[in-house]
Image (tube, rainbow, N blue to C red):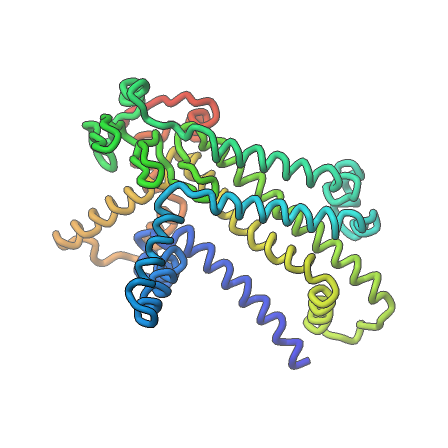
Length: 389
């Protein structure tokens, strides 16, 4: 009883912690969260921890060690580097190996019989049926690797002398986050149109710049955003699928091993504790695979939802940062002229909802031509503008 009650609390705390981490990583730089614990956690996870390591190393081993760590940081994060690409390949191929060697050969039809899905779908349409899983898993891995190559080695939309004049007509400044007059990039010696940015890592200007993704060692921009979104979606499905079939396999092995063992008198938390001990003691590789793929599925799902929302509004990650700066400046101006006081709870709740759904920025976004038109720009490559100023 007493010891078993600690397990649900531990599991609840673990999932709350992971939720906080995901929210902090994705939204911690938002203007309304930057001074909260979410903002502090965001800064710590995305570089603060390394600053602490460098500072401690300098105190203990001298400035030379700190300078060496900074040089490693510059090499790994400040320049094109395939390190995370190799790590990605190791994670995908390692997960496929675990599922293909330890799970699929032992997965039998009875393992899926308890699922409600199995009772409403034919065997060939049930993704958890052994015969379906045997081809669905390698198919997902193959599609994921293909999309990885497309996102990694495809042209993100590099600005060149050949396309500069045309793109300056397609991407005009809105006068808010982008100036009406084109900026001049001193590095590339080009007049840069709106929505583009010079990537300091790649050393080139990218059209409709979203962000530089170290996992694909490439920028995400005008020409590879579609493959990047598909990359996120397929890998979310892959992680969720591997997590599900592996957990299903562990559940079936537990039932076969402990059938008739007489656990009816135990509480739910005590039975869960027995199940976890069985999984990690007898099947540690599969158990670690469930935890890792489950966490990755949550993070990839959240990341895909965030970028899909931006795509529907014709916004980019880079523009989200710019809008935050504009809104922060406008808020300061209101305070300076004595405005912004006496706000009601309803007003605060409305602002919070607009902030979470990006509705406020969408209403002011000149490049938004409706969800269908925005997606057509990404998937069909036909940018069109509807001036609203």
